[in-house]
Amino acid sequence: MRVIHFTASKVWRGHEQMIIDIYESFRDNSLAENQLIICPIDSEIFRFATCKNLNVHGFEYKSEYDIKFAKKLHQIATHFTADIMLLHNSKSHTLAVLSALFFGLNIPLILFRTLIKNVGTNFLRKYKYNYKAIKKIICISDPVLEILKFSVNNHSKLIVIGSVVDTANFMYKKRVGFLHQEFNIPENFKIVGNVSAFCKVKDHYTWIDTAAELYKRGLKAKYVLIGDGPLELQMKEYAKSKGLEDEIIFAGFRNDINRCLPEFDLFLFTSNNEATGGVILESYACNVPVVAARAGGIPTLLIDNETGLLAEAGNAQDFADKLELLINDNKMQEKFILAGSKFLMATSTREIIGKKIRAVLDDVLVKY
Picture 1 (cartoon, rainbow, N blue to C red):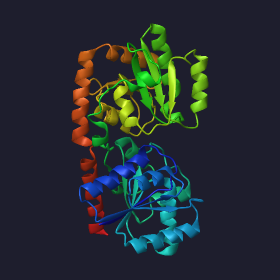
Picture 2 (cartoon, rainbow, N blue to C red):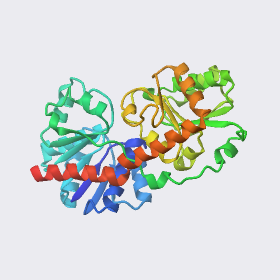
Picture 3 (cartoon, rainbow, N blue to C red):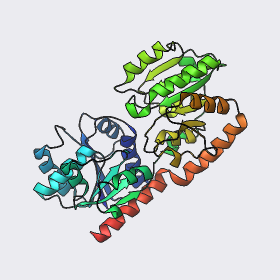
Picture 4 (tube, one colour):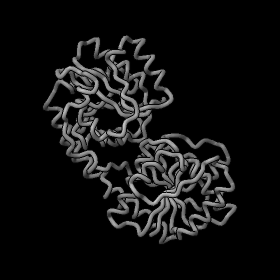
């Protein structure tokens, strides 16, 4: 099987990591004869794939309605003799449909969907989701699938495969105290951390409000936020308004998340509409206990009182109560760490998810 992974995304988020995970799972488990990543030449995934010597084709992204590139996409797929194309964001979805409509791109298209967001009633958007060449829509969680049912006519196209984690990159990492040293955190202080983009869905307001409540209660901790995004400056200002400029550390975008996560004593995840939250699985891999919001697809990954604790979305008091309970209870932490690791290894490794996706592709090609 010859597979193209196509994205027009320029940023580096969870879905872009997922593309790499799928590519390397297919390669390492002999699930594809050959693969090609098509992405903007000025994107983070192009840089990352190039550094890893993956087969990647960069293009100059102008618009999702770029007719010239839609024609070029057909040429690339033909030259590569692709059997199937995986579409990893909305803009690549549009370009692939245009390529099929106007230039004869004639291979099955598989769309990946990782957002809990209604497609809406716009005719063109609904059309591209129901376009005949879209043979399957792979959803990252049940809530993603359920919201798509309102726009996708043929529900048999929808399938859930779950999140994926490169366990080898996260497991067996040891806590060495480097974040304490880097940010001059006293050795007797805990680290409560988070890794996510600064955007509305992550609800950093509640995260900061939770830190404010815990600080008021006298918890000996510092609060580390890793990531960047459009709301970063706004969140820094909000933290300052709460008098937490010395308590909350904005660590910026980092490439060493696999080293940072094990340094956390607890992972606090306040996202209020997350499709799943792959960073929860990464926390499981790093033996970090988690308190997360009971929202979106999070409860499909974090089983309350079994692999972690769930709190009411947007309720800083509830988050603070759950975090204070867990961070002071070593036996509870050990229970969650063990259960989380078992959950991860049973559901979300590269090999497991790669084989599930390959089974979907096989089914599509048999029927094509």
